[in-house]
Length: 78
Image 1 (cartoon, rainbow, N blue to C red):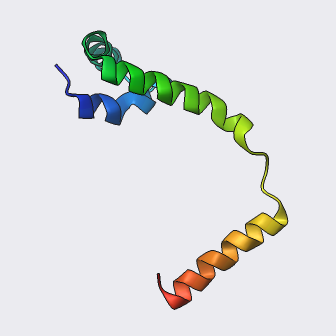
Image 2: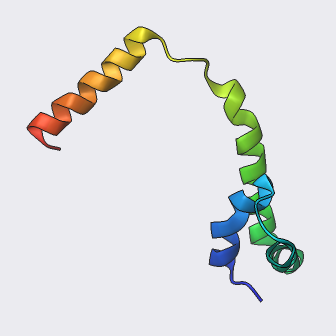
């Protein structure tokens, strides 16, 4: 039987349909017995569905601000 950590590590692949039948079955068996992992997978599914609606495309000003921040930390350190 899978441990919770293994289920969490593979939850995104489960939701994307990237697991083979044996892996999918192992995770689903674990989810039947573990309410904490069921909640985790459900919350991950909701989050992944919501991401496209969270923010539109970044403006040029936002991109410039982020790039300046990155460059200043590369030259000055953390």
